[in-house]
Length: 278
Image 1: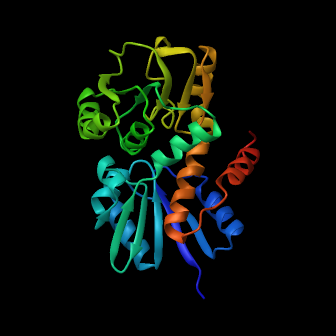
Image 2: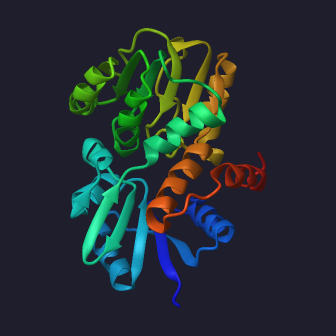
């Protein structure tokens, strides 16, 4: 019986812990898979996906900056993926490319279950309007906070993302607004960094006045890239958290989609934090 092959595609990809996570999931659930990481040239995403399919690939995770391209490439897309217009999972079956987005499920689970913070009734600031932010906004709305502000350097992109989510926000009775990062007002219980600032080593893209005392400051990045944001949050009285739990959570959902088995995400997250030194 042949080993099923999977991978994660991105640019850059050297930092990715996804191969370790999925290999550990497979060990703990008795699944026979091989999972690698592939750095894809910026203008070769579609060709790279097709090449992986031709090699017998069963599915792949998609990370920065290809989540929008992954959604556009799909022949079938989940409701979550359609709403986000960005996908982090591709599954290859019978000539079809099926796309989904589990980023938001991983984020919400990490905040509510692992960090023990309910999103219900909270004021949330989501920074960014790219693939990372697009993938989590729907599940954040479903958690029924009181308000979500989506703030982006380019206001128009934030407005497009908000407009697409207004119908479900209305159904959940969630106030949803778009803002420019520089013109942001108000204080928030939870701020989530979905910008590329940590990945690119840039400064925190918002003023500390947006933080309520004791606010949760969450960076979707992890490792060294998240450290400046977390240090900034701690220095201004917020509770910092990196995106490692989100990474493991979205990976667990992907593994379940591919293999039909839900792996022990909590155990793997604890092992990964120990592996990375906390």
